[in-house]
Length: 177
Ligand code: FES
Image 1: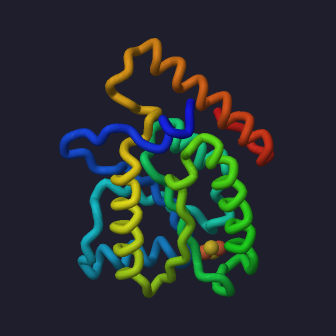
Image 2: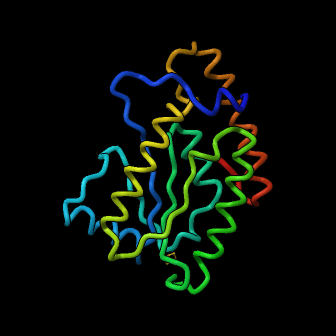
């Protein structure tokens, strides 16, 4: 798949980006909770997935989400110095940056974002989601789920990205199922 093709596809009428947010249990998930309790507005199309630490998010999880059609993937953890597993978020930062570099080749790097959000930052959580949603809207839908291509092309497209992502995952030491 070309970088141009991966960078953006025509926007569908009424389309809202599908964002998967991996949030660490101790800070960002609580921040998301606070955003809800405080009624800070953010797009309802975000799906929050709780993990114990941002370092738990393997490149293979991100690749699978994108391969399965997520328009964007957010990884959110505690601020540097606040990770409950000491250096988990520092490790996550290295890992996510490496994954972004690998995704650059496919034109998917802007669909992945890493943010630090504490338990008291409900407002920040809603702002990050709103901002990321706007960025993804500019990129368009994830081309893996491009609706206007026929079944044969879709099979080709998916296998192409599958092969590329598998090679990236192998570099990262994980495997995409
Ligand atoms: S526990 Fe929150 S990033 Fe590690």
